[in-house]
Image (cartoon, rainbow, N blue to C red; front, side):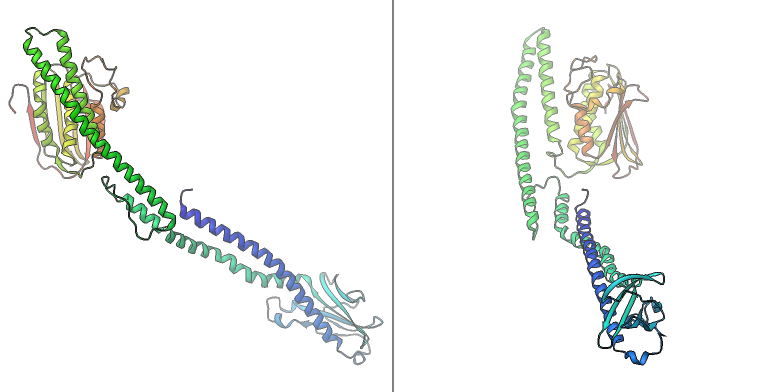
Length: 468
């Protein structure tokens, strides 16, 4: 069932059509019986009228006169065909008077009553009457086919308008059902028009009884969601405090230990790297939690993505310098509609991944430019790249190419690209991984919807050792 309105309209219309059809059949049958009785009564009345004729005035042989015509059918479509044929006989069976349509022989046996006989090529309904006072027989007859045609015409004139009124009834049903479903549509618009952060109860005026339970269920669901989100926010805040603090303490202690030792062992260095990896994992998990659509309910504002990228590069440039990598930032002012904090996290993850997986002395290039389709952001490197078969899989959480100990030897959490994809989806943008056409490594291409065109293009080239 795709539509309640269509279902109700078709169902009620079908019921009305079925009831009308059954009523029409029953009415047709009963009307035919009534019409037969009416026509038989007319034969009887005409027979009585003919029986009043004085047989003595008709003596001297049989006479032929004009047939009787039913009063109500003289001007009908049947015209003169709806006539009554009649005969008058003496008590001994001698024909003394007949109509034009009547034969010279008796139309029926000399027995009182109705019967159906054939003559003149048609089937006739004949009534025979014996007038004992006048001592003569009167026979009246009507063609049965004409009787049926006339009866059916009268009945159909009454039934057809009822059948033809079904489409009009269906239209009225559609209108009334639409009116009856209006509160449901109002409820749907009320829920659909809400912001993601609005979890207040739904309040409607004059809610029908049928929607009361649905409204209560929706409000109960919103209440449970609000409680669940509150618990998640508390968990994120508590986790940020409870996890960051001991990790920070461990980092300080390891730093002190490295300072005290003249020649730190490999175990101490591995301990320091493990603590750094744990801290990075905690930060990534918290970022992913904060940027979840159900948790990260914000009003997007225009953000200059190029200016934000330049700020992120300045913070990450120390890592680039340590690895002796050449970095290029190209583009110009480009506005996107989004959240600066989330976009900053996106650029940090993209840039950090490119630097980590590009060998020492490699090249990095970040391009932010305006296109007719919107803002284009491309991060390219000269690293090993990602095989095409795995380019969609790397967006899964905690997935790393070749496992935790991959060929690059770089430790990670497997959340960086998952966070990037998540933030891209939040902003209605697209992301695609490919091979860099200029550097030969990985290209991360992101396309954001247009907000405003950039009229100025700025190109900045930075290499290690140069001041920004």
